[in-house]
Length: 364
Image 1: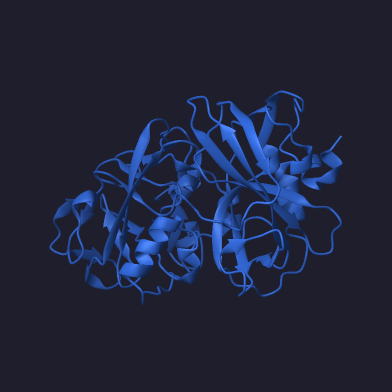
Image 2: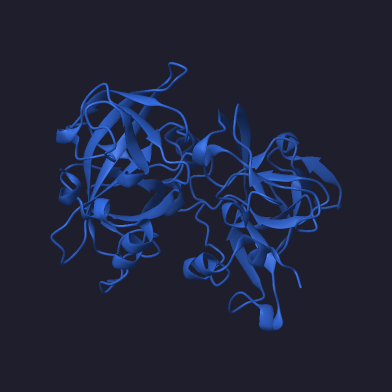
């Protein structure tokens, strides 16, 4: 009965993405970004709204039990924030979809719809933010949700509270570019050191600028579920000496030359999650995972298990993606740091969507 209220509920994810690319695109740079799910990926397993996807907050029923669909995937929502709004989303709007967003079109309006609290099977509470999306020139409205805590498929989440008027919220990405404990990083002299043993001042070999000192190393532990679970790239898949285990959004350099090139350059940065085929490369969920983040004076390409991969990018846009405590620590430790990303080397999303993980990884 409520599906017509949100057109996305009547579309497949592929149809929805196609529809979102039809409108002309104004020039809006991203202030920050977050990984979100379409509301259709969270469905009522039992309760009053049995069989329905996540709905507008006024139609929700406390006590309903939800589950995240097994094939659910996050998409990056790039946001252009009004100067007065800063990095916070409110019901008043002031935020637009920005360039480079995997969902929506630049200029579409975003607003805070509400904050939901669920109880997980182990008794932990899981908070979600509902985000309303108004496409330019369309009457329909779309709904996304941003998990503020890890959420995973196959588990049951009971809706405890639904607040239609929460305070302003910050759309943070709680799984930024990161390496797991034990990942070996190449030092300036060619030797290897585990990521957890790096400290500010240590000289690391970089692809573009030779030996460079580490400025900051961050560390956090999260539940390894959903978008927070690490990607495992087993030994030898990318000519790596040992298993490389990284966050899903960590980008790796893929080399492809000549007719088999993937872009304008022979080197393309590809997210680890885009290499997953559940055969050679897979996501390892369950338990907890320790993530480590390393920052330099510039956004660098370093060598992890001998594979070229990126360091944590720090600028106004990327700070908005970090968890609040981490963003505060980086801003206090490196107040004047503003990195330029490696333009021209990012994998085109349309190209990634067309190719299989095996095609992306192929080295011939």
